[in-house]
Length: 425
Image (cartoon, rainbow, N blue to C red):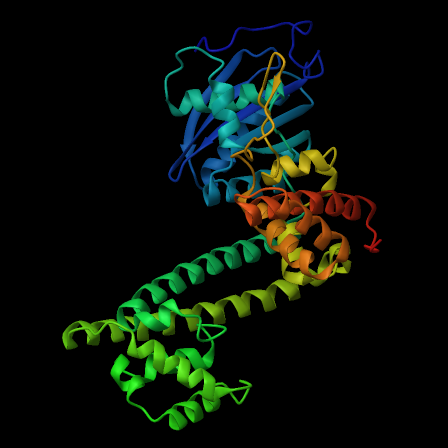
């Protein structure tokens, strides 16, 4: 294909370390996988396409083993881009394949953005599956992008399926709550605007939103009866239901009135939205219960950090996997997307830079959630969060949370690396 210029061991980008290693790049698709087999000197051996199924995976293994045997090569590096579910089954097969197991086999899942940037170093490469497979193989040969070895401990994979499912469920719940509040404004704008209830999604608040058809039904109801209704639905947990009832009626008095036909449709949407929120909350509880059960088989020194708990620590450990994949906490932070770019030219050094756009969004989410919880439970992290919060006038919480999460990364790395418990200062 003429995409790479052959090099000898002296000009090898890894300083001759890859002289006995075969490189295999696989461009994964939902239906087909395109494979590029590259020799140690960077020259092309072969390329081919197979179906993304068990038969295709067996063909890949057979042809790679054939090349390794013919060329008397002891090692092979196989890489794919992170493509969601399409590459997972292939990697499971390659990890378990006995024929490949006779050789020094390393599997890599590469960041697509990094592979794309690596491709830009070549001039005018077309966008084809074969070219993409070549670029993946060549990036493995150069080793200048993040080529962390594939996690082969399936306990982490199992746990990651659950923690990522919880991540998406939480996102769905957040979106559903926003839709609910939008329609609540249409039905009773005053209740959507005023913070009458401490939790607009609590049992008492939802009962008021669902039981009364219009703002007039709330405003015209006897205040004592409304207070009794709120106390009953809130299981007598409100210190002063009479005051809440008065606030609810005041909000209802100041709300817009809708035409009956529109009002009926809004009530229907609100009812469905409430059912959806309850269903998603049940899903999250079921996932958290299963996460805790699965997590019993994995060492968890992070549980000793106050405020994190099993779910957040499971989310972190599931994405980190074997901590020895990372050389230090800086590498872990970059993997999580908790690193800042640098802007420097001559004597100028930019003081305000943004977080990098790459990184594992699931790990970043769980680290930030854990950091926010830790800032409320640990004196040192609370002091640090408040300090960073007060340093600026814009994006205070967002900035302070990111910096606190970055501080947490150092702690997480050290606890996992040493397999020891956290002891507050």
